[in-house]
Length: 172
Image (tube, rainbow, N blue to C red; front, side, top):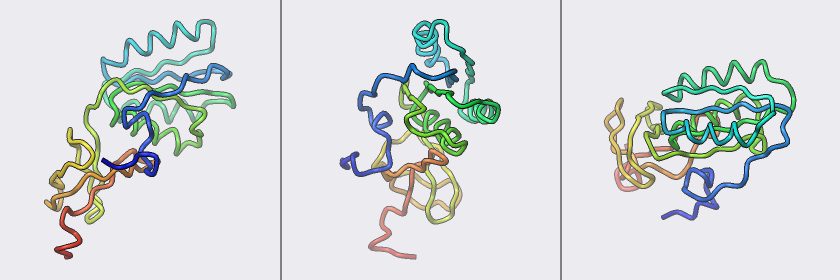
């Protein structure tokens, strides 16, 4: 198992307990992905009673990310983001937020389960969705290579890095 302190994988995505979310924002965007996120969103609404809130809840990360991107384009200084959903969806939504300019201290993520992650093939650049975990081997949907899921995650896309399982012994 890798030492996650030396990876780009956020601690919350590795199962570590997160910090308490920031309550000092001027307004809050609450993003939920999947049915499991509903309870977390409801708890946040109660916790932020009286604050200016916008709630975005979708069944998939792509829809949530598109809505978040639009909301962030309209946001003003002081907005704070909270995201709940499966780890892979949270990573993708976090990528939208980071690409829009949010800093880590302006967002809080509360995973509601593992779900599907996306693995970027470093050989053909395709993205393969999988329910596998870090260190597992998956087949790239495009080039067919057997990829090791590495503990590096793109901040911009939320994709895990995948590389050919026997790259050192069998270079192409």
